Image 1 (cartoon, rainbow, N blue to C red):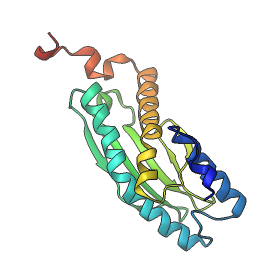
Image 2 (tube, rainbow, N blue to C red; image 1 turned 120 degrees about the horizontal axis):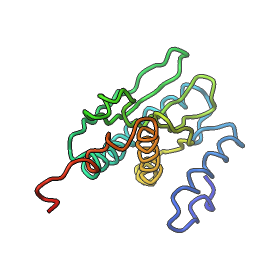
Image 3 (spheres, rainbow, N blue to C red; image 1 turned 90 degrees about the vertical axis):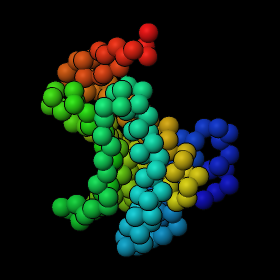
Length: 174
């Protein structure tokens, strides 16, 4: 990775995008070349992202779903096409009753792609070039944007009533 890929001040998005472009240019993923090595890197990335993905979904649950949600994770699994995927989801009663998907943060490395990506249930694709905890933490704004966009799109598909903080008054609210 070039030195300039970290010279973006507090903007954590540009270094990740630059790593993505450098990997495309070099035909690598975090310095490795073979599919097997890239999949090993991806497995490590899933471990690094786990805490941050759960944290983002727990924030949404606490702030918008009034703690009614349930965070679940798939673990690393092989896809039908031979790729790899891992996902973290947030479901809650109103979402299930409305018949929409849960908020989803998915890391995936499809067989036909050069390297992994992030996406949501309704939002895609963002390059996933994470190789250490600092880089994983820097993905929090992207994970938050994916989660927020998914929730917005579910409201758009149904209506605002799937968001408990909008429809319920707690005693603590005054």
